[in-house]
Length: 568
Image (cartoon, helix red, strand yellow):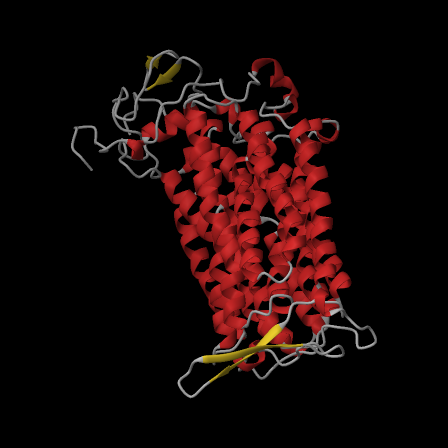
């Protein structure tokens, strides 16, 4: 390295930014193809089309997708693990208008459907279903709805414990280690799950609790990483890409898990598949990812300068003492926590219980169940990208303030599903209509990637991991309560009216919590984000602390050129 050129790591970039001993004024517009003074960055050349942040976003997306697949796989596998059971109390007679008829289909010699007859029985409703005929797994378990709810909810007993410690651990030790270990250890526990299930319910619950413990650190850790790597005006884009991993993981897990569970490989194979992929992902993560831009050996001078121009709005390298009192008194923090609580309650109600609803109410078989359960989350994944693109365009053209974008996104993400679940109370046995309403309801909830998922980084980038730990801890209670409440309501009572009660509870939670979020949230960096001695030096507008060096994404250019003008 040329000794006459000071390292960018040692030079704070102010509003008039100094790069390689030359001043770049605040007003100067620097485009992606502008040649910066002084030549190459000490770590790497000027850089081309692919920024190191793209690698971070891609591996983060894959990691979260696998994390959710490992979390959700039990929700679909448990349908095969328990087979068919009594869904109604034999001492209670049910009006047939309160249940959906299953059908028994017969074929003539030419393979043509000749008749479909509803099958009702007051004491044992349709215990012989099409799903039973598809099951080839011999090791089934006699778990009623309450035990199933206990097993599914036990994950969150561990999950709620480690969210806040995980956020602080990421801020102290780096998000790379915390995020990577959380997913890698979860993969190992997923591989052990079939053994645990065959041993005892207690062992299975223990493994699920441990899985929750290690996964509890994942979201706070990645939020801390994003706060270090992504400036405010780009957060809608990168949060959409990274956090689209959780619907993608669900989309991949449910149909693949359903197919494996109904195949000759058996339900255990789905745990082996996703657990194995998680181990492979961990190896790639620890080789390619770094905690901070200035520590990355392959980052270009242009990308590093661009990120350091936003020092007032991104996470500091040094750890800042946690201002608990100021956080507790902060209305934006309370609005953020309420938004997270309501979103998680509705999401987990659908995530963990949708396969059960489709099996017991709409009577889908095993293969259909996995595919149909995945469709709403496929819609969520796709809509997240559509909405993120729209909001990114609004931000680039200054059509809306960041605060308005956060509010609008959460209104779509929570009021939309609220209306959808109200409609679910009236669809009854219309399977096509039920699937349409569920797809729309779950789909538009993907707007939250531009809503409260960005707000942690907006209001306190130095504590983004801890803040997400707080909201996820509160959301974990929702993850525990949702399957338990649903199980208690529907045990021996798999009827339309019972599921209406489940849906209406979620409706009420959605309405109250989203309203509180919309009222209290802001996009401004809060004064307690910085150490007290530096509060007078910082600009808290959340965005204006620096001018970007990369005013547009280089991928938006028709070509990306090197310093000599050659196309890469």
